[in-house]
Length: 331
Image (cartoon, rainbow, N blue to C red; front, side, top):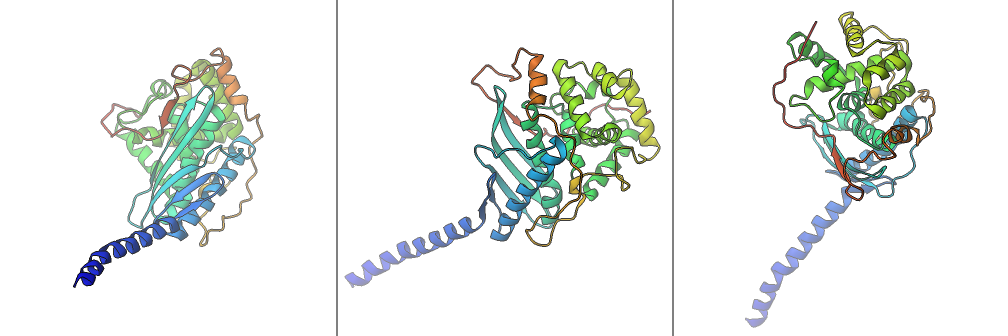
């Protein structure tokens, strides 16, 4: 009897150890590490697929935007992926700016497998590329607008549809307000739709490299009317607003810097059936000095662009606040 008692008492311990071991092995199997990312996903296959596609987009999008591949990060970026067919596409990426450096990456992505691979991942990774290039937060319209241009065509179509609805229902954002936005407005969806449309319009005029130079120049003194005139030939923000609105009203015709399909962005490709990244035939943007954007901005502020005292990193997130109503326009 005593032996049986000891044996029965030991069984729960053994069983718990076995269950814990199985759970640990499952968790480990759903983790995949690459040079720049550590992915946690529902299945080992998804974790590997997301990790390899994350490296693909990081490489290809950095070449497309800044003309060359970014160096490896000192520490990989954790990615937490929630993937299921019924989930809407979305993501949040956080990082820290401090004395001209950016670090402490963290990314959360959700959606169907297709949208995670071809829209959410490239969108969030483009945020990291801009953070590394500019070393400070971009204006909200430009950051979200540019990151939306690399999404799948189906997601871009949603933004284009929303834009018309917002403009016709008085929810557009006057440029004099939009260009001053350093934080997300109470109602963020008009900002996303309008920011994407204006970004596409400006890139279509002179290309991606010129667009990034425009942003760096405008951030150097926050004189956006001057930057708009010097880089795009418009007398002021109101003139640019009217020209952009005319283009939208015409049905957004193809611009000189766009391909025949109306988009020249990488992520218009369908995701692959296997983890092998898709090949592309895109021509990279004109190469610019990797340090040039930060140097240009910092040079106008005595070499300092951090928002907090030295040693206190400015934590930044691309996640907007909850939506609330905001007055907007359509002419």
